[in-house]
Amino acid sequence: MINEKFLNNWLKILNYNNKINESLEIDEITEKITIPFTPIDVNALLIYNFFKYLYPEIINDQQNVLDIIISNDKEKILDTILYETKEPGVPISYEKLNTNIIKSRKFSTENLEESFFNVQKRVLKKKELRISHIRIFKEEFIEILNKYLKKSDDLSFHEFFISLLEIIDKSIREKLFFISPKPNLLSFLEDFLQFFNNFHLSTIFELLFRNISKDNYVIIFYSRAFSFIVKLNIKSTKKVKNCIKIFNPRDLEIEFDKLDKHEILKKVNMKFKNNLIYLIEQGQILRILNELFEFEFPIQKEKLNLFLQKLLFQFRSFQSNWYRHPPPKMYRAFYRFLIRLLGFNYNLKKISHWAIPELLYKSDLIFGMNSKIVLILYNLNPEKDPEKKNNVVILLETENNAVTNIYYPSIDTLEEKNTKISIKTIRNELSTEYGYINIVIKIDKFLIDLIIQNFIFKFTKFQLFSKLKTIRAIKNEKYLSMYPEMPIYKFIKKSNSLKIFKTILPILIDKHEF
Image (cartoon, rainbow, N blue to C red):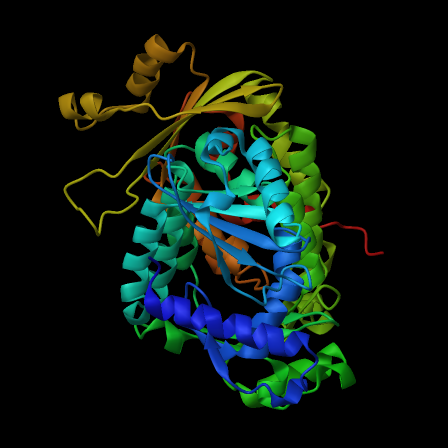
């Protein structure tokens, strides 16, 4: 049923997992194996460590798994596969069970908890093995996966991630697979895609991908238990297996245990010259992700505020939670001193991780505690279809200064009647359908890209002219307009761009040098 090449590779992984689990000398493991669902080849030991250290953190930290394949109408059990795991997350055996082990009348995806309990009892009785969770796949999911696997070897970096995200998106929206007990990751994705119904995971990737400025990166995911190195050639049109390389430090003959983080960066730099090299603490990433996956939609204001504070704290924790080679100039005291002489306090180690989220939540002073805000994002994809406007209209409904509902009204009929339709007219028309609209804000893709490039991806660079260019674009009605105009926006339009930047900096950067 599953792609034969994929299955053969999967059986190899289980075989090596078993060998490593039986205390075979680790140095003897030199064979390359393909990471499941990708065309990327890595050392077999690396895949074992992915299962051992990452799967329990993200999916389930208990032993033994049962995969169940069902018909699209959910009436038939087509296949059952048992994986024994002596260590949580690390499968070492593959055993097909008789589908009769599951009683169809007691199995339903509509009541997963009870179904899991019944399956667990049946497997325990027949195999004397307690399973920790079940993964259920519809036949359609296997068909979609097989189509992807046939072409995955020929995909570029961009095509690979778009294809994978589209499969995840479709599978979750159409309920093509289930996991019980449900991990936080799956709950988060289900809630996210339901709440932001018209947005797709691939859209987020596209937004980030087009704003990444540099081609080559090396990222060291560091932990004392298990580190690995990822080399990325992001903008290349070559096949993805040539654009993403993943290494165990021993593949590069580097012993991380004997080095501090600065020495690790220097050693890795000697192997990969002309690349930006980042070292990131694995534990910090997993903690942030696990907190993110615990969110429920609509997100409570206090929880999001706290999460943003923690996220910004990670950004300011250079040479504590993350490192870079070569180090950004803005972290050098002399460079900051020269910029301070020009009147700019741009100390990134003092980012106001507590003040910035508070500022974002002061919108109630502008819109009120309960409001309806319309965002029009336009010119999103003109290169794909120049004749099409490619506008996205989002109506945010807030209560107590937190987003509670999102609607996606259409303004196509209005635009057909009048190609130069004003946002005042849009506000009046939408108010008749959705009730009083507090404000309509129209934002061009060009401005969104500028903000992402100059204030997120290039946040470690001062680049005054690039940041002033972004502020000038904010002042330009071609890229940002609203009705009715807020007092703060009127002030921004009248003010000098340099003055605005100097006004904003003391809010973004903590002035207290302690």
